[in-house]
Image (cartoon, rainbow over all chains, first blue to last red; front, side):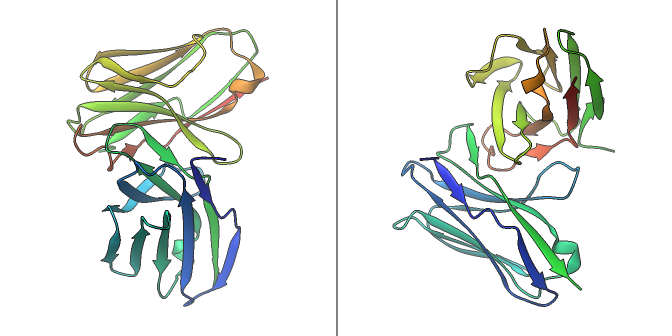
Length: 110
Length: 113
């Protein structure tokens, strides 16, 4: 079993839809949870990070962490064509090693 | 100004050759990383350096040798390239305490033929 499992997608939604992206993990030592966005042929860029359980909102993006279920989510409201990218979840135990999911490719259709 | 820059962006080479990828960051970060992203988009850490000192070495073949001349630079040298080394290699940097916020370069697409 991989330490971090991510829904593979690809996910195709119409513009304006609410998108839900998810990851599960097995390592209970993970404390920091991140979401990165990667456009085609670009490097990943950090969208959001949260520490421990709870919700965090930033504009149209909301990150949720449920440590009891070892489950994290990223919600995108009012999705735009510019949101089309691969979304990578990532997590760490606070040391320098960050473990990434395999990414979910999202396409928002105008 | 680009925060984390890598050169070259594309690299096509034959099996058995030796090649280097260079990385520079102008963010003043203390920690730099090399990641490998395979064809399935799986991003895996290879090395981590903090202030020129090797911190993480993730069971990477010793054909891969990172070199950090100063904390703003982390280069990757690869000896005796193999077909399986074909991937996109990303350099990244972060503050030591803020490893949750890593800034990535644009990647080097290495193709071994």
